[in-house]
Length: 371
Image (cartoon, rainbow, N blue to C red; front, side, top):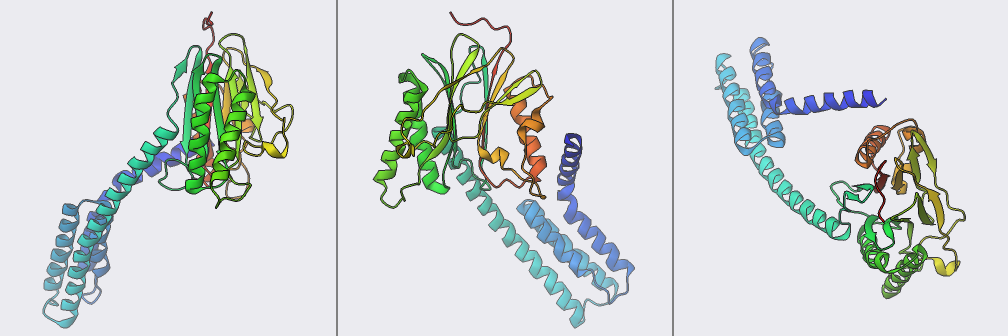
């Protein structure tokens, strides 16, 4: 299945690489068609399509050249058949000239729209890097990789969040999913990540971190009178990987369970007891329970948001990461996440309907532990 997807991607890349030649093909094809058919059968459609295609694909200079080429070809063929002076020939030429001029205007509009889009992308990327900074690629024996894919086209950030940092208690990670979309979700991401980065260095337990994030989300929600009571909660998984030992600790607040990959096997690290998302603890106090899970050298921990497991194909089937990853070995977390994104894209046909955040941590084999 992956080979088929790779072959299709290669075909698409080759097609895109030759796409700029389309205006030339249209001009040559239109000229040959016009020359070889009855004088009253016109190639006007080809002559008008060429500059419009150039406007969408090429530069201003190429668009102007395509328009001039279309006008020249039409004049030459009309003169060849003796139709340049009659009303039908003049009307056809006027159409080609008009469309060529419009193509130049369309090209400029697309250029300035693209400039604005690129500017918006740069701003969005700056926001993402400020709110969700890239974690270090390695911390001691751990290698870390993250990926983020927003559902909104051309967006860089949405309602999912991730973080990983070294602390006095070990490496601590957070992956979560904010309820809702848009600026409200991004605001909640900013609040949750800001508190996590501070609390991860100060709190001796994962429960303490969760409590501080909880209070911050509730306070933010209460300050905004336009938000209903249940908005602003975050499903999340908190992870602590101590500097020594071969175990890690997990605290799951209503989030999809992490996956542990080792020697081709994949298993879910299910919480020992269900818990409500962060921001809703007042409905059921005292529910933070930390679980310990074996994390030996060579193993990889995969944290993800529900954009992964809720990714559906055309038949409505959800992607199953356990089935997709079982039996595969990955040199490191980057290769795992690249493969995972490729499989999800192939499964959905590129139709991403929800934000997707991925964080993978691999414990290297044979690394000397910190003393």
